[in-house]
Image 1 (cartoon, one colour):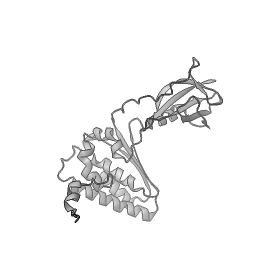
Image 2: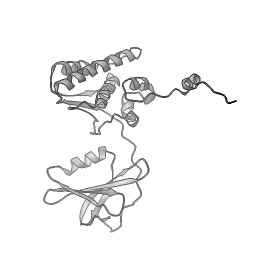
Image 3: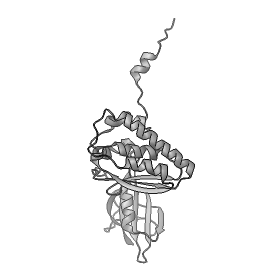
Image 4: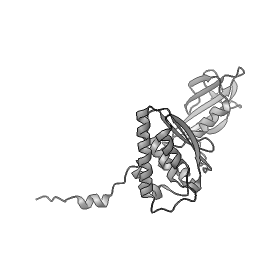
Amino acid sequence: MAAWRLYRHRNADGSSKDWAVRTNPDGITTTRWGKTAPRLAGANTRSGIRQSDIEREKQAKGYVFVAEVDIDNDGNVSLSNGRSPDPQPLKPSPPAPVMALYWHIDCRANRQTRKALAAEVKRLVGVIDTLSDSEARPEQRWPGWQQLTELTLTAGRFEHSGQIKPAQGVMPWLLLLALKNQCFAGVEIDMATENSREVSVDLKAEQEVLAFFGTDLDSIRSIAESLGLLKPRLNLASVLSDTKVVGFR
């Protein structure tokens, strides 16, 4: 048996799944996976990729390193002393604070979709301008406002990348999230932190990014609802006041 690096992902319901990787003498990378158990049934081999790269991909998805282990051809997992790893899910480390935020747009859409994208950029910028008039202006202006407008209107198919700094405020990030949430065909919008962790459109799961901009979910809720990133809260007081009470006789 050869040494493997074992990782574990803890699910929200308390269950967990394991993933292990090793590089063979011929340079082929082998992975095994499955629910946390003494045996990992799933197996795959890949070539042309570095083990360190796919380990980083797994870490970005929430997998935590457990130990170096041995795995036989049937998938049975054991430590170097012959014991099986602790089957209990490990408590994940607290998320690291976000230190930088990067974005990338790859537009390969047809002309009709590009026109729709340009119209949506214009609409969203207008919504943000209207709703942020009463907010404190950021220390720095994000250059992407003008760049996105010009690219979607005149550039045809394009690819563009950049960075959003804390001093530029949270609004550029919300704009990109709103565009990503639209899922335009042929338009890929990706955002990632400095350690290559992909940022999702689920604001509730991105507390660290909100903290990076010095804000929180409640503070940006109204504009996030207007951009379609959050469902509006039900105002129970308003609903109850509008409901007629019908008595029984």
